[in-house]
Amino acid sequence: MKNLVSAVCCVALCCLPAVAQKKHAMKGGAAMTDQQFVDFAAQTDMTEANLGQLAATNASAQAVKDYAQTLVTDHTNDYNQVSAIAAKAGLTVPKGLDAEHQRMVAPFEKLKGAAFDRRYAQEMIAGHTKAVSIYTKESNDAQNADLKSYASQTLPTLNKHLDGAKDLSKAKPAGKK
Image 1 (tube, rainbow, N blue to C red):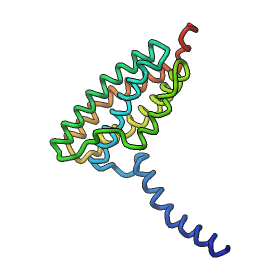
Image 2 (cartoon, rainbow, N blue to C red):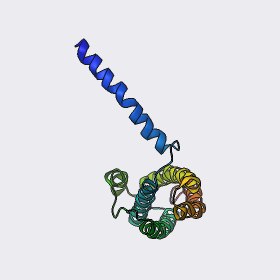
Image 3 (cartoon, rainbow, N blue to C red):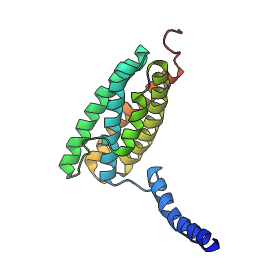
Image 4 (cartoon, rainbow, N blue to C red):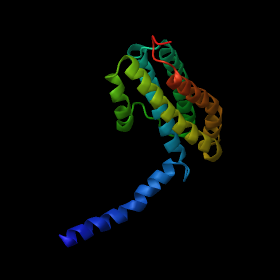
């Protein structure tokens, strides 16, 4: 039993640097590769568009529906833009949501009304906070000049989305104005 515990501890200790390195890279430590940034941007755009389409039928507040429609439009345009830049740079663009992003969307399919509105606003704040951080870093560190420019040009829109999500989270539920 002692040997088993020792072995488990050794394996865990050996894995820690890899886990820390991955978290460090995603939290702004090491720069993303251009391919990683394209993957992040495309997955984010597709997720935002999917959630925005769900909001059209599942949200109760008109402000949430209007905000979501803005995100569908903006993130669809962003996806098309990053796709064109990636193609020019010889990078691949995901065509559908990966498992991680499908797991993010799935709970929203079951939510309706005010519960959807609250969760949607929270997710938009979290998602756009992360996106602003990554796009800011890429606007400085991207290897490809076109991706660097794209990240810089997209930041004001992402900040506008973040501010809008914060406003939604402060709004009173529908019917209680």
